[in-house]
Image 1 (cartoon, helix red, strand yellow):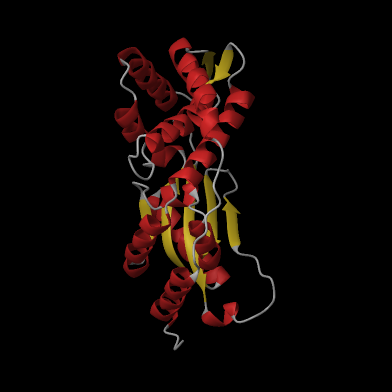
Image 2: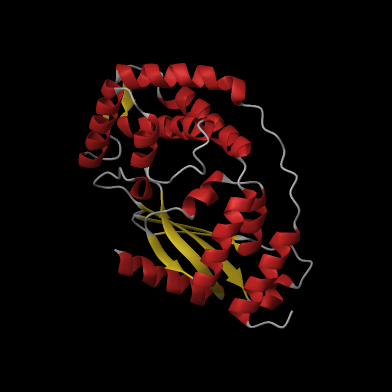
Length: 258
């Protein structure tokens, strides 16, 4: 499958006339609890030729592609869009660059971008993002006695991410097991989470089951407690460093004299 994905990425570069700077796996395959029929969520960052940016025209800054059987889900962001999201400490972006499954990367870009992540990381902004996600998914997916098992992770993962941030453990890791090991100390809760992971891995995406009391009670308690943390503080960060990084990347990739 990796070869299929790399072939599709090369096709994107040729057809869109871009250079892919970084490509990774996102979603359940990066988190570590994919089902037998989970799709592949490929996320990537790309850059255009220099002349593409020298225009006042508003241009599309994302690339989305799906295979006919929906097994492959590709989504990419232009470098300028990426840097503006980094300025806001966008959690999905931060997770992409910690993915355990990397398909393609330009070493210069990857190494320098990782340095910028540390500079622009905002715990408050990330906490707000994860808490909002947890509340929304909890309300939508976990109110009945019978639930779709994979939906537990859509609430459990952001709640654990909030607790990770609360404990000042740094950027939230992509792998789910790191979150569990770093946060969950209750023996029964951890046992039930491990069992839930096995059910997810050995089942199909839409499998359902009865509500798991220990996990549901944990989520209810933490979401209610965390509501006090939901006020987000707007980031006030300069564009100067991002602008320089953008120009340096253009020079490195396109050989431009800027």
